[in-house]
Image (tube, rainbow, N blue to C red; front, side):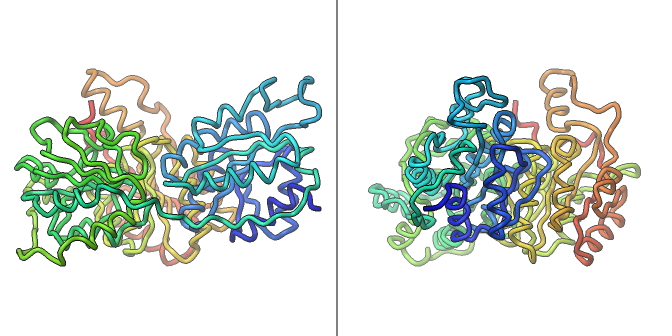
Length: 543
């Protein structure tokens, strides 16, 4: 017989979990004490949302379950946004929250997490794949097994368990639960039809989304593109799934998209092969009826949105993208007998993006960063115009090294994701690309990076405003309101106060020196870059 808290920690150890992220509170202290006794590091985050982001970044980089802990009541509700972000990234994260006492439920309790107070189980239902309250020790095994199975089922995702303090202390029979291997979905029955369409296509295009990251189907994507000489464009969230300097790369389409991708579509396409994207408004920004393909073949693990974004005949290939691409490749000829496709970038896209005397250009910043950072650097793009500049101007030389979410889009999440990923990848350069607005929200997690020696390089573009909203509101509504800071944040001083190595850069040579120093001297480093507040970001195609 063992306590529920003991069994929880025992399973995390067996799964290779070395760090758990959260903020303590009385209902969850038995679990945290057990973590400490068994040698798992409890990372004290600065906000529960930050803990959830860190757990998700850890799960992504460590290829295992991420775990985030919040106490009852507000500790739990603060995790909700992080759960929604993990769901958008298809990451297996276990969100554990507390409740004062199951035996006293129905009485007046501080931070009650049941339907008598704040029912966190119901709140988590829409942002996780499973949410339940373990009301008795004997139920723990069943709920725990079901939660883990749901976290790894299909395209993966977060789950939530609320375990009251007295239930954590109950003793139950021991059991073993291995972490599920990500079992591929059954091969689609429509692959033969897809093969025929692909082989007969005269002017096809591959449109690649974040699902390729989730499936780690980088090799299959490149093999398909090369074998049939099909050019590749990515959604904003698909950035990093394909080398942007590859001869077959068109760059991105949608927000932050390239003129190259747009020009190729304008010449007409007959088949669009869609891989791992819902084709949301962020991905289709600037897409109009004149660009519609004649047919779509859409690969996705989730059928919910297939065929719903564009009024075009669509063949759905449901299931694991990696496996279905492997099957598709098996039925295709080795290589078309034609020359290597190569698209010449339009002249306006090849112009050097220079800075002014007073400010650096954000576009130029991305080119400088690319020239200084090693090719294996893992970059987490936070939500804002700073990352859309990267989507257009930051080249990807190694697939699987750039991550950005264009679906849920929580500002500040990239800060926590980078911290969690760096803890999992201590020997790999990890960069968080973020802005002053995101830093106002979750910049305190820089302190978490310092405290736990996660030597992230935080590159923070500062223009004193919520840039993407500011420029979009001004263009589409005629006037921006509530988008600028009267007293802007001095990010370098803020970072220094938390113990980080900090730089404030106003010129290119300062930026180059700061990046070189950060790579040479491993420390949590914050590089604040003063960028032109009047530069127009590549996001204006969204109404």
